[in-house]
Amino acid sequence: MSWRARNHPSYWAFVLHRVSGLLLAVFLPFHFWALSTAITGAARLDAFLDWTRQPLVTLAETGLVILLAAHLTGGLRLLALEFLAWPNWQKSAVGLSAGISLAVGLLFLLNAL
Amino acid sequence: MTARAETWLWIIQRATAAVLALAVLIHIVTIVYAVRAGLSAPAVLARTQGNLWWLGFYLVFVLATALHAGVGLRTILRELTPWRGSSVDGASACASLFLLVAGWRAAIGLFA
Amino acid sequence: MSGTIEVAVWRGGADGSLRLYEVPEQESQTVLDVVTYIQRRLDPTLSYRFACRVGMCGSCAMTVNGLARWTCRTHVRNVVRRGKLELRPLANLPLIKDLVTDMTAFFEKWTRAKGAFVPAADRLQDFARVPPDSRARQAASAGIECIGCGVCYASCDVVSWNPGYLGPAALNRAWTLVNDVRDAGNRERLTAVAGDAGCHACHSHRSCVERCPKALDPTGSIAGLKRATARALLRREL
Image (cartoon, rainbow over the protein chains, first blue to last red):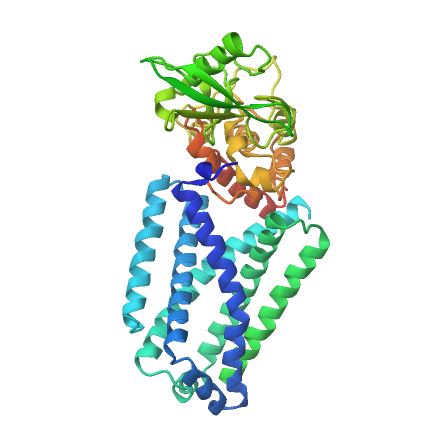
């Protein structure tokens, strides 16, 4: 099986979906732990939120948001593929446009630009 | 795993995906709003403490995530590693359970 | 046209290697012409398959420059890269020799997917009346042109990751029968195609759709099987 055989959009969509899913799953325990610092009181959560204001952390957060947007829109594309009878290009267009608009909108709104 | 059990996993994966599509959208809008308004512990807690709606939302969100991630992890392990059989099923179920407990603990921590 | 093509051909078994041949370039030439030239003029020990040589039988399928395709319907001009061609046997199948694979597993999975018609009526009954524009018949007709060439199977990553996976061709055939209103075997068939050896292992890479020389849509068929098996499970029919 050569990489030439895998070099087409639906395959890239699969790789993106799998990688983003895996990275998000790995990130989640950390996310839940950070939020649970609130159990001991607002001070610990505040200290953690202060830590997140560092530029590298903000960059990582932006990355996570993009992964989430990619996984969501890729997933919507898969749901359309499995449950609706749309031709492939329409489903990809859904994923692509939704993904781009979501990511760009979020990037702007999160003031990362 | 039997054909029936695998079919159930597929149904669970797609059903939780549909729930998550909505939940993630709500979550992202919330976070964007929260970040713009200034992200601080008091601001977050003012929103979540004592609020049954947010608690209910996050309990459902976490449950869907834990199931969805668990099924997904099981698929990745079975396809890309030699791990098979009931032990990989058990490990994936443990991952699901861990996410569920950690997530519900955080949600309750923000509510209480 | 006075050039030559440098053709690397897989020789031997799984532990074999690529051997180089120089083949004269022609004005209009298919990869099958190239392989035939090698076997007839340069090296009679080369083993390869073909039959109709006009794109009807699918026997000549092999890997050309990394992609599974029919050599009789592949013009050298469309695939040659800097004067070079690389020919290997179809992937995901045991190798017999050179460019010839053992297709047994491919057809055995067809059987395992219950890809055979199970009649509900016998010859004493009237003909079945099947409206050609019904959704079921259109779904069936969309998939029945498969000639079992193996290109989709050779192009599927899930087949290479999961040896028990029935594969796009067998599942596509099962789907055409699920949609055949004359068929009586759907309870067993849906059970056969459910599970991680069946339709639920498909991740919609769509490599099968990309490579199918008959422009079929196995991914779409498999999606149909996913819906059908889920419906059957919820109705306690699985």
